[in-house]
Image 1 (cartoon, helix red, strand yellow):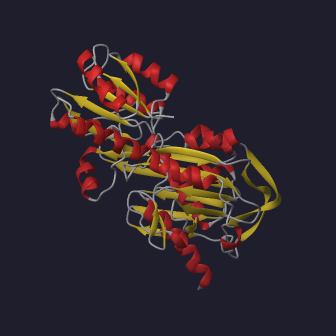
Image 2 (tube, rainbow, N blue to C red):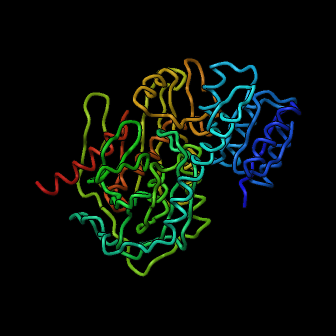
Image 3 (spheres, rainbow, N blue to C red):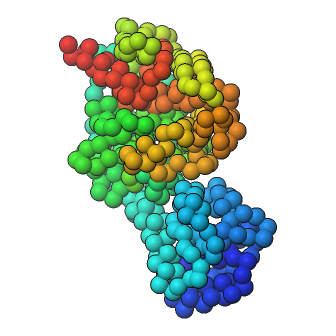
Length: 427
């Protein structure tokens, strides 16, 4: 079936011209001059591409763009304007538009924009959908390396009941991406497979590369960024055997682990006929210096406390979390979103990071206040740090039985204490 394009513009001439150009090239078109009507049409028709005017009579085009992205994180939207500015164009791209074109519209520019929008939308989708039916490469999968502290626990091993595809944006790449969750048999562990290359990477500390602003796994020249939020949800849910097929970067979704938790419950968590193995912390491990420290010590359960201190408006925050069950994690930790500071944006851009940070998938902190959202918790920043710790610690390959006390630490420290555990065992 021909691809469908939704055109949203308050000028009848633009609606007519764009429709004619696109229909001559074999596309089906829908048209409206209303932002509200555009949202209704998108919900009902799910067009492949949207051409969206910056200025609409009933609502701002950029607000409509944000609403479309909330409806569908993979929505392909081309913004159009007759009197836009460079700052408007930049903002549109940062909010998730695939392109920005100026009126009067040329045939060549329209076709270039629609072609690129479709490519960005379909490339990860096609690769992921093609991988869903692939057999699990069991002969190439090996369980996580055991340690003396790994013992049989009271809970069963777990996986999910069926395959699930998730689409979204990469927080640091800024590109449309996605992943497939695929069940694995007992004693397999958690593994990542790159799409489309098919490189297998164990979700293990031995495969950790970069830890700047996110945790990255790499092998054979392939990198998978931002694994910590998904691993956090898997750790809390007790998922021990799973294959993650990822196109470039794990989707950031809303910047928290809440959507991953909902997805796991939607597809179903399945107990397996084998006891879960846990890493039981049997001594005190500590890294850090000065005000910064991370301590992991024996405890009959799993508990994480975190203290942070940033300049105003964040200030000092602390939170203490006992992970008694999946429900407590979903309520207290999973909704806490990643955050960033206006003062760091220039540096992040220079490093090629943070390109997928939109106004609806992280907390943006300015000099005096939070700029883009209402906080879900007064101490949401500290809770998100705990979310990250729970995810990073799962890179030992086993659920943790112990107590974590962290102060002013980040991903690099989380990985450092895992390496300290490995070093202590081999010493």
